[in-house]
Length: 202
Image 1 (cartoon, rainbow, N blue to C red):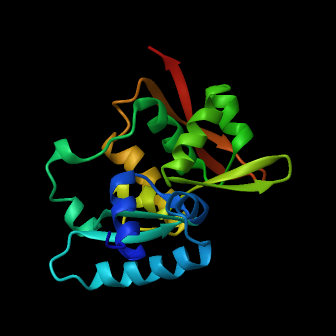
Image 2 (cartoon, rainbow, N blue to C red):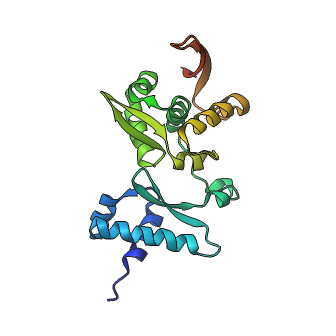
Image 3 (cartoon, rainbow, N blue to C red):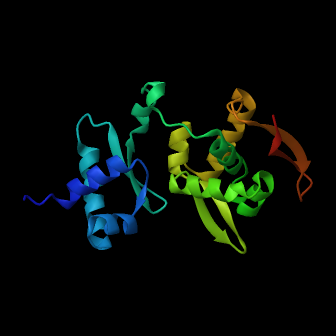
């Protein structure tokens, strides 16, 4: 039986997984050392990038690897082929983007205990980063988040500003189960800060 090259196995694994995978997961799945996996991933990333006319790319997001459609091509795909977040995750993602870096404890206050499941699912999808900060975690968006929502920025502050503009100007969150309301409040320095908060479920 012909041995399949590691790069080919990685490409097939990432393509069929439909989500980002860590080096540990790839190592355990394919039976190769993490160093071998890492080196082969870098080679695969370059190979896929050089393919003329290719529509996919290999990316590393938050320490995990994924194969996805190139952003410039994704905009031209039929709507039916694009993955969409369930409303329950969209609410959590919207709040994180709007308030990032957002304390996990704050999101739990807004969404209840279900927030922990939402955060885990968003992190597994590579859309949200979690960084420990004292007794809680700080939640931020990732590059994959920007690509999914069509945001032209990856810098956290720019994503936050872009998302706030979108909320105000386009009503992009109208389809949520619960309403998201804007509220002005005074910050510690006496300035006015606009806050996004959940309304009552209809």
